[in-house]
Image 1: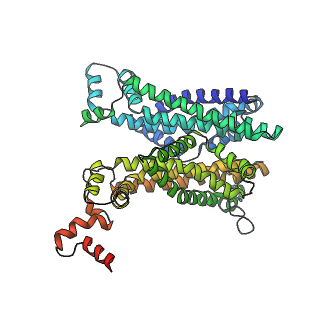
Image 2: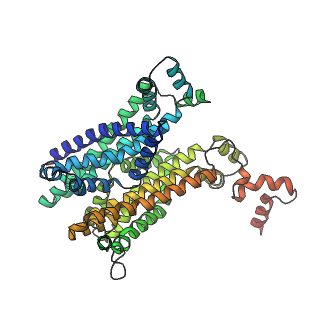
Length: 223
Length: 265
């Protein structure tokens, strides 16, 4: 049971990291685009999703979302055995993406103006500008806060126990109610969380060193 | 009419079953958040300051505490307090207080980090100047560094308050009837009101945290904390910061002298 829990937690972690980074990037680009409607939509998204707890979104995607879906899709979803995991992924993603997009947007503001001008003058198209010049730098500048956010997201996966997604926290509760060996299970789970968070942090530090981020030189060149 | 019927439980979302029973709903969320921030602030200052200490036996336990708590999900802390504190301590505490306790443990670690960052952000010359005027380390911290550090901390402090307010929704897991739990109860008891329940939950959280973050944004602009370059000590209300000014204007009675005469009396 514990091992399934670890597996599901890891699945949740991997899936939400990838999806929320993607969605967050899209929304960050929307928020800095020149088209006003996109900007307004992006800002609206961030303001709505940032100010409501992630737990609400998880519950929302589990209980309400299948009800809204047309064409009987909802019934199919409800019948799907692993729907709690899917709902957890959806809820965590929309919650985390708003933070990611905010962080990335601040990263865009930190990039010197000359970079964009240089990209235009070499004849890159707008898509190419983002793909090859702006986005890599945005990720590089914002790596520390982005990493913190990802660790936070990892901890938030424990909220999925509210909808009975069989992840680690849920498993410990289950063990507690079946065998009354709650303390052992919870200790192991807590240690696992601390261990994995430590691994994530050290990975981020390694990545920082690897990319050789020097924020101070960045701000100097901006001035 | 039908719509009004849908939202007939609005009082339960806002206050819980308050006049008849315990306070609940959104009000409980706000109470939890405010209580937690008031209690954990002092622990946060203590921890954050101790983490900067040069003595290892003070620094290491604080570091261990902060890093451990920050790496543990809030739910885990809540479980530890709620289920296992009675085992270990042999005492029973109510759901509400165990929620406050676990939120405090959680918040103290984060606030400690905010305090530490604030203290580090004060220019090093300030401490050196304070020490060179003959202040003790404690007085330098108390009167020179901390007032400035608190000004720097205000934005991150407020944004942490917003996130703490949202985190209070997590305590529904041990059956505290706050807004999330109220919504779940209603949507299970009266399934036809499910949409209304979720709208109320979302709107309740959204309105409160949006207004706090808006307030924070305005406050940030007014204080103008980020331009330390143009930081004027005379704008600070702490009396100690006014000291050099007084010395220039009134020559014979500096506050230093009055302090000494008070001592001799």
